[in-house]
Image (tube, rainbow, N blue to C red; front, side, top):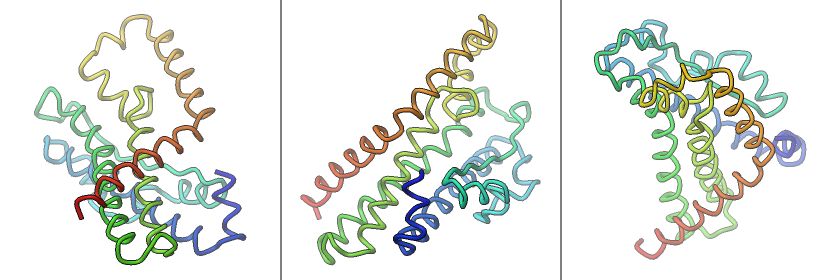
Length: 208
């Protein structure tokens, strides 16, 4: 994250372009949650104005300030699981956000492959498209973690609700340790995201 903030002075074009991609990706993620919740019968997010890509609505001022200061951002859409019509509605709504990031990563990979063919690897726009793929795949992986506060946790407890009742504090403590390990090895996740995107782009280049 420090590397990202340092680029505000070293490479402002990279910083602002990446910032736009991150904010856009988070807003798409949250919009997907809101839209899926509405589909399953919960109007909470819709009634609070979350059917939009407006970052002030989807992320909030504090998230945008933290992103500008330390490179950490988040979004949050209010949902009411009790209003959903289907038993697995909460899991579907939770998965809608990460799925959107995964689809965006694929779209960015396709555009990167096209850009490499017509503009070359040194083109600024092509590099930004690759950053879009990398950021969205990373958001997908992080949000799918089965840790309280993440979408993966909602999916897990929807299918395995007994987790909440069997020594809940121990379970949450274990997942907290997992979360800390993830942030310790966040660089490795970043590298893994870059590698997976690179392999997909190479595959796409063979068929384009």
